Length: 94
Figure 1: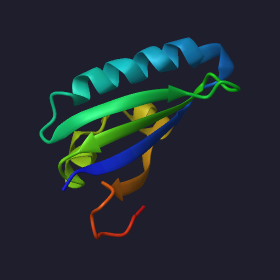
Figure 2 (figure 1 turned 90 degrees about the vertical axis):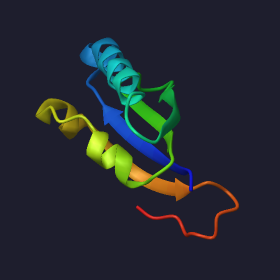
Figure 3 (figure 1 turned 30 degrees about the vertical axis):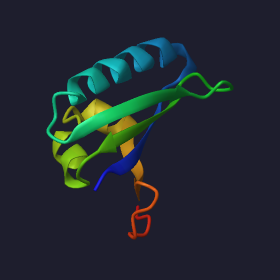
Figure 4 (figure 1 turned 60 degrees about the vertical axis):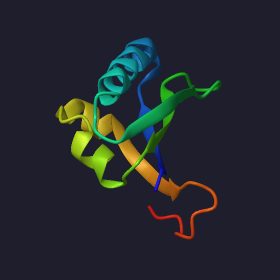
């Protein structure tokens, strides 16, 4: 079953460019994780330090095992929701 996960990151305005660069590097590394399918990085137009990553996985467990272990990153980036692909009988969970 393919699963979507949404990750949210918030960086202060003065660190928004660095925050985006770090997020891009993290998701470049995540592509090597088992069950990775793809992702989209979205930036809030009104708050450039507010980022969302919509990622796709073959398993719900993989992004948890594969998530960044650096404490500074973990405090700013976290999965906020999980959804099965449309047409699946499972309910959304968070």
